Every structure is written in C-alpha cells, then in structure tokens.
Length: 295
Image: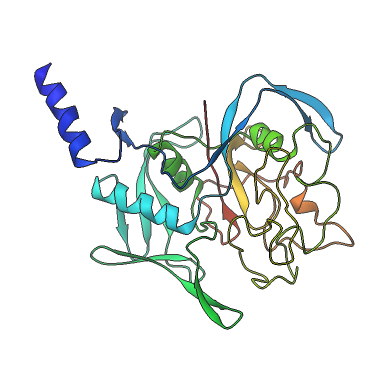
C-alpha cells in the first residue's frame, strides 16, 4: 500500500501540472488549459434533413473549437515522453485497444509523409508546424485545425486527456440545437460565414484559424446556438459513430474544400451524412476533430 502511494506521489511530482491515472495501460492527463469546453444541456434537438425532433437525455461538454495543430503536437510530445507512441519522419503510431470491427494493435495516428501535412518531425526529438504566407506575411499553422490525423489518432488524443469523440447525434445537437436550421448560424451561407472552396477569404482553399469567423475581419459571428465555432466548413470532424453498422466512421460538417453547388454547400449542412463510412485509417487534409467529455 505504501509503495503504491509513493508511486502516485512521485508521478505527480514528475508531471507537476497533470493528474495521471492508469486505465488499461493508458495514461490520462488533465485537459489542457487552452481547451475551452461548453456545456450542451440535455433535451430536444433537430435531427436530419426532415427536422425530426429527437432527444439526448444527458448533459455533455464539447470543445468550443476543433483541436489545433499546436494542441496536437503538445499531445505528441507528452505521449512520446511517456513511451505511449512511436514516431519518425513518416508518422506516428500507437496502440488501439480494439472494437467489434478493428482488432487490438498498433495503428497509424498521424501521417507526416504527405506534403500537405501541417506537422512534421525531425529525429531525434524535434516537432514542427509548417507555415505559409498570408497577405504577404509569414504565419504558422499553429492555430489551424489539425489534419492528417486518423480516427485512431483522434481517439488516442481524446483518451489521453480523459475525453472522447462525440457521437454523430451529440455533434448534430451541439451544431444545431432545436433550431431546425441547415447551418449552425441559420439558413444563409456566404463567404462571411464559413470556410469552403473558393469562398474568397485570405486563406482561400486552405484551412482557416479556428474561430476565424467571429465577427472580425469582415466575417459574421458564425457560432452554433451553444456558442461553438467551426461546425460548418474548415474541416470535417471525426465522430465515434459507425456508419450503418460498417467498419467506417461518420464525419460531419464539411470542409474548406466543400464545393458550392448553386446556392448551397450540401456537405456543410449540419444534418448531412456523406453516405459513406470513412475508414478509421484514413488521413486527409480535410478531416480534423474535436472532443467531448461528461460533466
């Protein structure tokens, strides 16, 4: 008993800003202070294109913004220092405990090999986030949503901090509430509201910083009824839900590459389902994620 207590004390001293526990050989750290969570109350919400009223019977907390490149790199640094992942210039790999479709084993979490990957790694221990020129100034991708992360990599990030990925139903309720609207802010779409293909913003045809559409810089304040940003456009977001009992996962929300069709970007409707299950092994410069937790 004394040795167990001593081990806990030493662990807290070593990781001074984190509370860690053992859970199926996974180390869980405190949620970082730069992650803002918003409570989504139990109750009715508008579901599907037909605006069916459905219910979620519990409160939950959702991230106000998608996980950023910098936040994900900070996770990689901590997870690597604890021996939970393996990493090289090509990508990040780690353990997944398994489910009814995917067996336990090591899976890729991040792909660094793609030229469009925003993050990278130089041996032995140097992580970096790429940058670009915006309006003739150099700007990093630190505050842009992380991409090139598989579902397994999103799951691992959430679990590390004691969070989880939202179900498709939780995601839609947080984006839409009981408004019946097609978009988080209403039923009107223009380049002032969201990031989609050829929308004309200064980051055109690329990701924008999270929360960019906040009423500044000629944008509309495009938050959901609960005050959550970037739920239509910018990046698709992984959910925990299986697509129609297949081995693929549902993604929600559209991306910077969602194409304008007449006056609508159907991909970005908050009720929209691609009609395809995305493999958890898939990496894309259009897919990111955010996490939820229980109060």
